[in-house]
Image 1 (tube, rainbow, N blue to C red):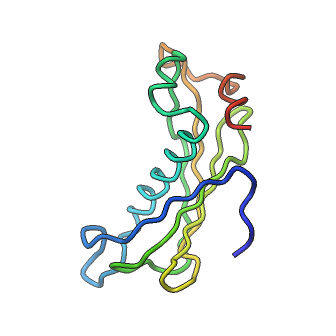
Image 2 (spheres, rainbow, N blue to C red; image 1 turned 135 degrees about the vertical axis):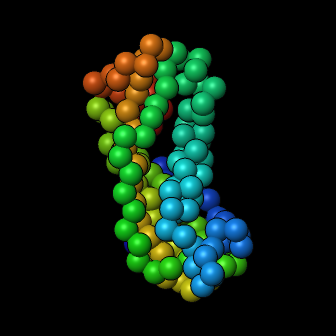
Length: 136
């Protein structure tokens, strides 16, 4: 595994039984939940939890999400999800890497793209400076 970019955050988890199928393999849709846990930690680390967005009169929504599965996670595997910002000017692009700590193999990688909405729900064409400054 390569070194993480500056500002990356990580969350370590264990695969719970309710996330696996009959073969004890994590259902593919749960990886997006794992991404969200890491994204929340990343934004909170920069003072941008949901309350902060509300206080600024803004919100963010996911407009695109991608995941490339490399090696399956299985029941009780320990794993780490790393998250970091790639682009914050016009949209907020966050990259993820899922590392299986039990096997030592990369399990997945992905990205989500978020846009900022103003208080009336209109999409902004640029990420506001107050958010860019916290994510830079």
